[in-house]
Length: 238
Image (tube, rainbow, N blue to C red; front, side, top):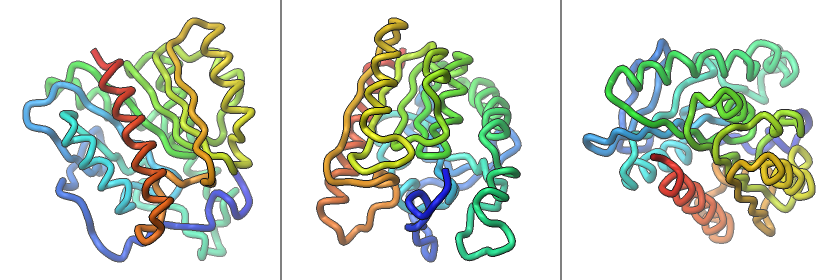
C-alpha cells in the first residue's frame, strides 16, 4: 500500500463530528455510537488515517441508527499516518502499525464487547482495516464481514475466510482493482462462503470514507456503499 493513491486525500480532522462518544474498550480508545440495548456490534476498522475521521464517525452513527452497537477503535494508538511527517514515511509507519498488530488488538476489543452482553459481532474494514477484517474472518472471531476498497489482502487470505463476506470495490484502484475483487469473489464461491461483490463506477480507492461533502457524486456513491454494507450485516448477523 504505497504511493500517492492510498494516502493523497487525508480526512479533515479539524472539527469533531458524530453523536457518539469516545470511551475505553479492550485497552483502546474507541468511538462508540450505540443503538439502545443492541446485542449486535459492528466494528468499523479505519484506513491509515485513523478513527477520528469525521466521515467514519458519521458512518458509525448511521450503523447505530440501523440498530447496531457501532465501534470505531483506535488501532493506530493515537498515531494515524501523517503524510506531512517526513520522519515516518508510509513504509516506516506501516512497519510499526502493521495489520498483524491490528488483528491482535481487535481480540480484546471483541472480548470486551462480549463481556458487555454483545452476542454477535460483524466488522467492516477500509483499506488497511480491510486486512484486519480478513484476519478476523479467517479466525471466525466475527460473524459477518465487509471489505471496502481493501489493500494488503491476497488471494490466499481469501481462501481461508470462514464467514459471509461482501466486497465493495472502486473502478479505479491499484490496490484492489476490479479484476482482483472478482477473483476474491470467485474464491469465496468455490469455498462455499456466502459472498457479494460490487464494483462502484467512477470512484477511486478510499471513496467510501474519504469523499468530500461538496462532491455530490462522491457522496452518493459512498452512501450507496454504506447501505450495501448495512444490508449485508442485517442479512447475515444472527
